Image 1 (tube, rainbow, N blue to C red):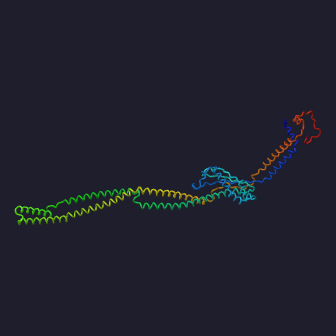
Image 2: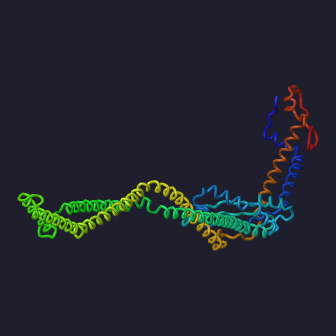
Image 3: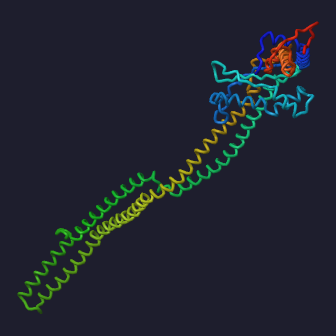
Length: 455
């Protein structure tokens, strides 16, 4: 059966094992105090920096206000702890110079903390972050805390400037190429319009009005032709009037014919009066024919010639107007085809023109961004609180370490005494014998001075 210890038994066991407990406690206390005294002092310097709101076009450098809070913190932390920044700071400050370059950079990364402080209330979105550096030299940690955000700013500015410059150069090349392509499309459209100017869709209304005008003129000339033909027929059907010379010749011919008929009725055909009357008839008929021919030549033929001239003029005008009308009609009929081809050319031109306008606008924004970066100087970051060289070490806390050493020594002494008591198998009284199940007949008390450790 297991023995139970009372408080008196525990105190008695500690009294017996006091040397072991004191030796273990002393060793632990000495080790703790040595660690406390030999641990090198560590100084801390911190700088608080505000990232100024970016004023660059959002098309190229998105505003920080739309970036999530965690992403902004991660971006700043990785930027400050980037290897180029740490290498430059370690080289210039000489912090951890006892280590190699790679070890110094890694140690500086481990001893640097970047934490986000939060948003600046009011105004444009801005970001506050703290760069804290720990190290054995107060002057060097102060320099490192000051240079880390500065070099991160320079790195950021170099990246942004490189992006803006590369983008502007790319857009310059694209703008020049698109300008040549746009000029080629413009020449194609201009040549097409010059070649098919009368047949384009915008000329349909003009051609239709011209065709209607020609149709009206044709109808007018056709009416004039009909009227001229009617006048010609009337002129050909006209008979000379009596008082005219042809009329008098006709009357003389009638009188001679009546006289011949009277003579033939009164005399024989061989009678001189009959022969004379026959000669008078022939003479009257010859004069009548001569006067009629003269009348036709002097009056009828002149009128006919004038009317025929009018007919030829009107017919020529109708022919010319018909040809012109057919030309206008062909233009109207061809307008849809040329309009479709012009629409295709214009569609390609509008696409290129829209791309050109967009590229020119983006190029102007890129140039403005590049100029703004150059004009801003060092205004990407603004130091809110500059670091100062610490006068007291931030670590270690030697008082706390000493208290912990004392506590560890007490625990170690107690543990050592308890372990020594537990491992000792000797019996010290009736209780130990009773624990073994052996009946105790008698107990002999201790005679003489008590030793430090009894059996």
